[in-house]
Every structure is written in structure tokens, then in C-alpha cells.
Image 1 (cartoon, one colour):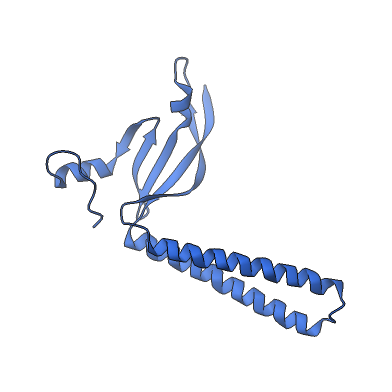
Image 2: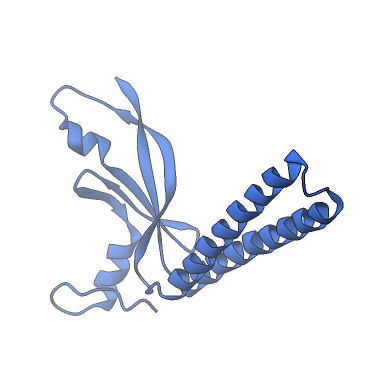
Length: 150
């Protein structure tokens, strides 16, 4: 039986991803600044007793709160370590369900992306495909080591 399931998409942090996330946040912050400026300009032309003014003020305060959150996120992005995996979203995927499958393992699936390339597909507790492990085994010595992130 073919079923649909949620698949978590994670990204491995690299300097490129950090720059992309930072640019994305800065673009949204600029958009918020532009919207706040538009609201402030509109407020100057609306009588202070108008009902619209209170709605615009509320919108402005929400936008400024969102901007504060984005600025905090921007600081968090700068502190991400290379090699760290961060959740980037969810997608829907299909799974061929069979009698005897273990439900928690069926539902546990994630895709890991590094610099826009899929490097691992993890299902249940097993990794079904991972370019990362192939690269690690070629570059690391004895024992299990973390990737150097470079």
C-alpha cells in the first residue's frame, strides 16, 4: 500500500548557506522597513480619530515585533557552526507500506541537503543513502570523527 508521509528537510550549515540565510533575512527586514515607512506616511495623512489609524498602528507594531525577531534570527545565523544540521521545512513523500513494517520507522524520514545537493536520505534509524559517509571514510582516520566542516 502506498502512503503519503511528511519528510523533514534539513540543511547542513556551510558558509554558503549562512550567507544565503543572512541575505534572505536582510531582504525581509528591508521589506518590513519599507512597509513601516509606508504606514507612517499614511498615518500622517489620516486624521488621528479615524478607525483606520488604530489598525495601521497595530500593523506597524506587529511588523516591528517581526523585525526584532528577524534581527535576533540574523544573530543566530551568524553563530551557526559549519556541519550543523538545521531544519528547513517539510515535504510530502510516498512510502510503500507493507505488513510487518515498524510504524515509528515508517514515519521517520529526513532528507539532508548541503549546498543544494542531497547528501543523505535517512529512513527510520538507518541511512539509506549518504554521500557524506563516503566522503568521511575517505578523509578520516580510525574511529568515528566529526566532519571538519571545511
